[in-house]
Image (cartoon, rainbow, N blue to C red):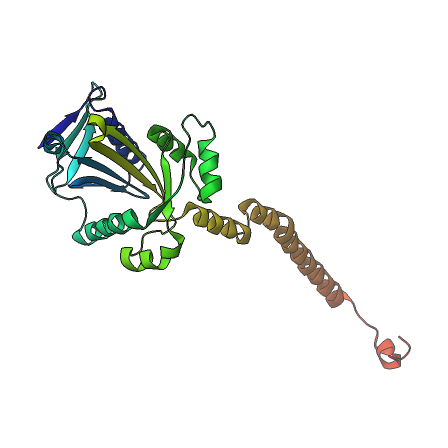
Length: 268
């Protein structure tokens, strides 16, 4: 089973797959989990994405019916995207269950925060300001590809519920959702990209900053070794040499016996 997706024929699906390819490409050390289950799902490191094709037309359902199988994504030399069935899932069953739990609970527990206005040149700073979520500079490219999405976050009142049901996923994720309508509104396609599903970069940055404050800089250690420890060693060696010289002088010195007999320590 395989599908060839052309940009000029299916621009929205092509956009989703190009974003998936971008996520996989920037996380090459991580094995992506890309699978179908009526919808098309992707999880790779700190990112997740889902493509949902809903239609009232039988023809569309036949064309875009994702099987419950793993997929592999590639791009042909002519630019077309190729989605093909993989031989097996690229993860253990326990992780796949955890991934499905994330999508299941994040889907209905997320709350829309605001919509990015089309043509807004300051959409990235606005997203950060409104959500108080950190977005890395590398994520700007992904957000630009999505366009002007609706921004979602986990409903603050459901933090504990999410942690209980979804497991160890980060409740402070950020989701960007875009959609398109076809066939006079009879077909609705949505794509949602999740950022920071494993860890909160804001927390990681604060932890790193705290570590840097505690950790002594390397160049300061070198400075300390040079200016403090080395002179101490030299001073000790000089004192030792002076003591040897004094001992030698004392051994060579002869004290007259009469001085020893008349010596009065109170007068010294």
